[in-house]
Amino acid sequence: MDKYLEFEKPIIELQGKIEELKSYNEDKGGGLEREIGKLKERLVKVQEEIFSNLNPWEKVELARHPSRPYTLDYVKYLFKDWLELHGDRRFADDKALVSGIGRLKDISFVVVGHQRGRKVDEKIKRNFGMAHPEGYRKALRVMKLGGKFGLPIVTLIDSSGAYPGIGAEERGVAHAIAENMKEITMIPVPIIVIITGEGGSGGAIAIAIGDRIYMQKYAIYSVISPEGCASILWRDQKYKKEAAGALKLTPVDLKNLNIIDGIISEPPGGAHSNHEEASRLIGEAIMKAYNELKDIPPPELIEKRIEKFSRMGAFKEL
Image 1 (cartoon, rainbow, N blue to C red):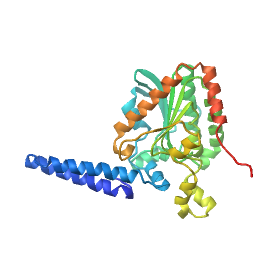
Image 2: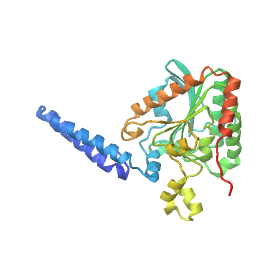
Image 3: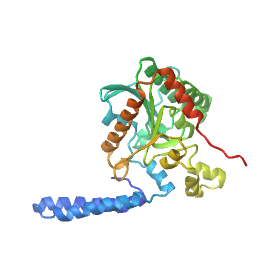
Image 4: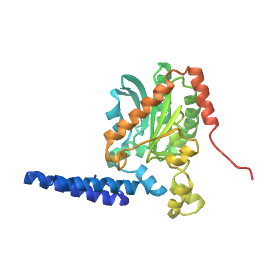
């Protein structure tokens, strides 16, 4: 792993020792299998210890991990015969949001998701996964296409938020997000939402209206970033760790608040450690949700979807 977080350092060091010992063992013709096995056992214990004691800010860092799989990584492992669809038919093709059609278990799905980019040139091309209004309009166009042809929809969310630039404001980014929330509610096919990394504010909710909402174990979902929250409430971003705890942005928090329906496990060490296994676990969740939803008549599906979001939120009267 080229890039790692500070708390992952003991894991990376152990993995390095295992690889060195494997190489040495091959050169010497064997005999060190027992030692390699002991190191692997130690690695499992260290991973379990570290990942079971993460604080909210460390979970934020993990959700933003530079090696975490993005939408097109999941598409590669999950969806056959992938056909990407481009453009909003009004302004441009926003590459921060990708959309298309592919087959999972011989069932055709419409897939919409954020794409951040890895290398510098790709990050710029993808605008770091922050969509403009044309991205949300493209997403809505393709999702409506799914509704028209009876194709279930999967959305994969990983964005710090909608792009806040002048051009996006001029082209109506707030309206695009609001329109998506309204129109997606009425699409007459099963919609399965998965937060795979960072689910940030309106940039996430614009494609997060669905019948089943899941989060990967080390994803986050929040109305604002911890840095933004700290800047507003504490007037200083250095309080971002306190803000991360106060925002209740982890899957366990959100499941307890009835915002999401379930938590998808990740491979030991997080989704970034094994893209293929992370994809398999997401694929299982998609098929489970699809099988629960596929026989519900469209009017009932839409009614349940509206009820689901109407129930969200809680308050106390003082």
